[in-house]
Image (tube, rainbow, N blue to C red; front, top):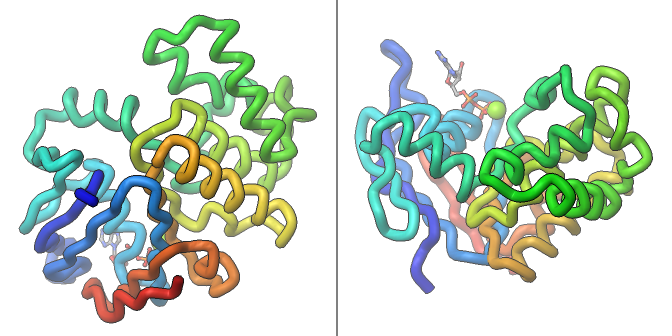
Amino acid sequence: MSAVLSGHGLGLAFGPTTVLHDVDIALDPGEIVAVLGASGSGKSTLLHVLAGLLRPDAGSVELDGRRIDHLADRERSELRLRRFGFVFQLGDLVPELTVVENVELPLRLTGVARRLARSQAMEILADLAVADVAARRVNEVSGGQAQRAAVARALVHRPAVVLADEPTGSLDTVTGELVLEAFVRAARAVGTAVLLVTHEARVASWASREVQLRDGCVVAPATTS
Ligand SMILES: Nc1ncnc2c1ncn2[C@@H]1O[C@H](COP(=O)(O)OP(=O)(O)O)[C@@H](O)[C@H]1O
Ligand SMILES: [Mg+2]
């Protein structure tokens, strides 16, 4: 199968510090890949480079075999909106909006009608057991509820790729599994490829494959399935 998203020979330094070194990574449609590594090993930076939020100093990023790291900012923003879903960190939601308004955003911004957007957003919030707080503002829900809302927003528009940085970090086992099940459903139903940063073996066990980073290098692309 040909990769939906791939990075080739990615290198990045912040000043004198090399953070990514010659990283190769490829995601097939419908595959869930766990990125593991110690704190500071470059996991979040890799996600930002693959998302087009940071430009690599070396190498390239391709979506559907087309190079995207050289595109203009506006084109990369458009791709991010339509083809990607992100779960980056808490605080990532728009605080002035309600939970359901946040989840609807990727749909509304791409022209989906209000009622359809609302029903699709409510459906995925229900899957994640946060439909009951849909009408609350983001600052009126718990950290774990906000995190699940962020996951709902990342999946609602059925993106080709989801990049998720510790998406179960502030969740207990049961709600964490709701998130992982939502990723699996998206992968199976619409072929979404999910790249999932975690340092929990329990979370990584949901992935079809693991990529291990150490000091910015891929060290052990072990198969776990
Ligand atoms: N904007 C930045 N400026 C300078 N150094 C950074 C920046 N972002 C990350 N780093 C450094 O890059 C390394 C990798 O960071 P990061 O990708 O966040 O690691 P991880 O997510 O694996 O914990 C760390 O040493 C971190 O301090
Ligand atoms: Mg990180």
